[in-house]
Length: 100
Picture 1 (cartoon, helix red, strand yellow):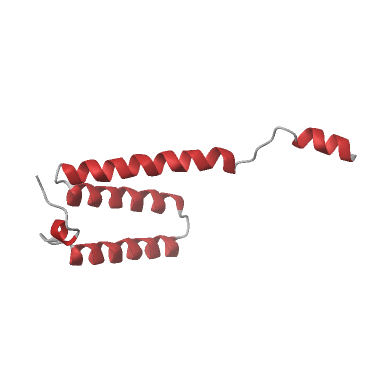
Picture 2 (tube, rainbow, N blue to C red):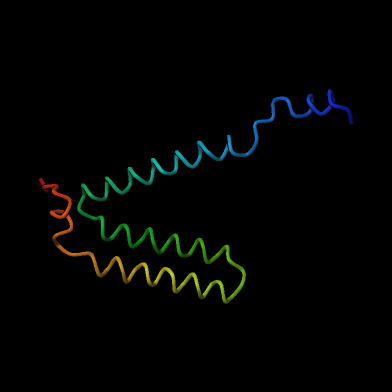
């Protein structure tokens, strides 16, 4: 394969990052909107626990090694313990945001 053939084959190929990048941005915006809406409806605690459980299940389903699955389970359990520790009724006032 000479240089001109190589250039012709690569011309017009943008790569995977150009497809994945906008998709990730869209998912982040959707996630942010979901958190904001949950906050406004005062259901943030309940909805975040559901999101964390779904994330854990997604990661565990991808991991094939049993030891790694246990590590993932422990990691999400630690995350839950930390978030439960810092969740209290003053969460909203800690951010200096008033409820309507």
